[in-house]
Length: 107
Image (cartoon, rainbow, N blue to C red; front, top):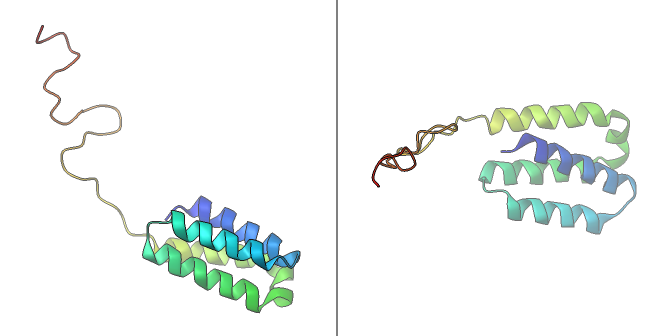
């Protein structure tokens, strides 16, 4: 899960909750669910939305703590290491099985 995107979504939802814009909250949630590829991220976003909607007035004084708590929860739930598929090089080259293309050979 992309933690920065999750954090921005939570901040936007908190602002929408403060201004009582329910349609904007659901639009943010729908857009984030459509763009997230992970089931745990979707579940965590739905849980965060429910927490924000049910505890509007209570949590607004403690929004930094809520934000950091949700970020820590997202890191714990989505903290599994993703392995790189076989056959791909590293970020700075490698090229897999390119066969020496571009290195002066073959022509």
